[in-house]
Image (spheres, rainbow, N blue to C red):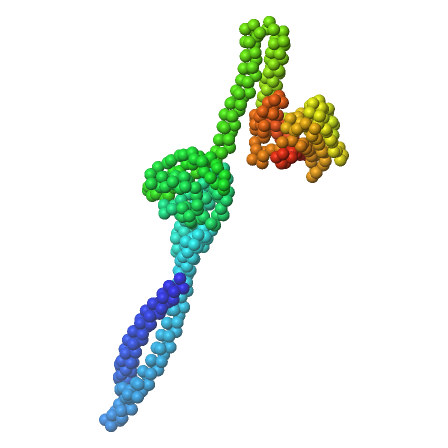
Amino acid sequence: MKSLRIRLLIAFGFLYFAVLAGLGFILGQLFPVYVEDSIHTNSLHSHENIIRAIEKENIDLTLEQEQAISNAMPLDFGGQDLADSRVYLWLILTVILILTFMLLMAITARLIKSLVHPIDNVTNTALELAKGNYRARAYENVESPTIKLSNAVNVLARNLQDIMMIREMEQERLKTLIENMGSALIMIGREGHISIVNKSFLELFDVPFDAIYKQIFRDLGLPNELEQFVDHVFMTEISYRKQMQLEIQQEFRHMEVYGAPVIGEHGHWLGIVIIMHDITELKKLEQIRKDFVANVSHELRTPITSIRGFSETLLDGAYKDQGTLLSFLEIINKESNRLQMLILDLLELSKVEKHGFTVNIEHTSLKDVIVRATEMTVPRLEEKNMSFEAEIEQDVIVEGDSNRLIQVVMNLITNATTYSLENTKIKVKLYEQNNNGVIEIIDEGIGIEKTEIPRIFERFYRVDRARSRNSGGTGLGLAIVKHLIEAHHGKIQVDSVVGEGTTMRVILPQKQPN
């Protein structure tokens, strides 16, 4: 706005100069004429007054005397006198006009400043608003002629600030929602460039944000089936949903993918958005449920079939043979006990899996837990002529349910006995580590393949089905063990080498979290 102020000063300067120059020229031309006429008129009046004064005094003058008086009073100035008067006149006029010009320019500059300064302020405020600084405000002077403009700009600034605050809040909420949603999200622009991705997507495909932002989605190396899904949404421009199995980071994942076009204002097509829900766990749970139903059906059918078959045989007349009768009754009793154990384990597993299941927390000696569990499993060890060794550095006291912990150790020792050969050894170690009580059950059994270790805690999963069934196991023991340890906020670890043996490591915190 300084240029506007200078331009206005220059314009008014030229205007003042032209007006004063014209006025000076006119005065310079008219003033000498007026002076000469005035002098001539005054000379005539003086001559007449002298003549009247002489006549009044009755002085008789000769013609020669009157002629001398007239010659002594010239009626006009000479040329030189007039020229000198004009020089003085021009000098005075020039000084007066210059002073007047300077005075007018000073007054004009002050007036322009008083008028342009509010406009400068409003302009600067508008520029700040254009830059995005919505906190800028124009100075409001009640006496300023631009007060209405300043008020209007300030109202606009406040409205823009409110709109921006609301927009920032909405963007922050949207960003928080997108970043913290459990599903992977990616938005692809109309030209195929990636515009939005969330944290779940980056973690799913293990790529940094800078490596994919503004990139074409085909350059990401996405699974072919997912690229085909994106192409389908692009071509049809309608919402589409599909379940697919994708290989991501050398692991197969079940994904439910939803795609939809993004439509802006006035029907403007902006691109598409893809949301991927990871349903791998749901698929696993569904498969576990199917396996559970199939396994329960199979486990129940086997003893029931045996009981029914042998009872029908007895009813058909075999009961008359005393030896056959006793043999069949023993089998029926054995299968009945097996069926009872299965039902009891199912009830126990259902109880510990129930939401809100808790254990009776009290100070418990892990040494006593091992001693009591060993006493109840000694008969099984003696049946297979197995030796038992306990290595207890010192007693470890933890906060836990002694009965449930005895159940855990008994189950692990029983499993170790079942999957070990005769004349081998089972070793139990107890020690303290990092404010945890650690129990290790080490056997010299058949071992477990690494690929099978994650599955041994599933219901009805058996490493060696024939050996487990012959031992009278139900396949639910380790599932119950895992839930009981988790109820104590502990964890169980498995180390195993096929053909050498297995180590089950139970880690229990000495103090339960609040």
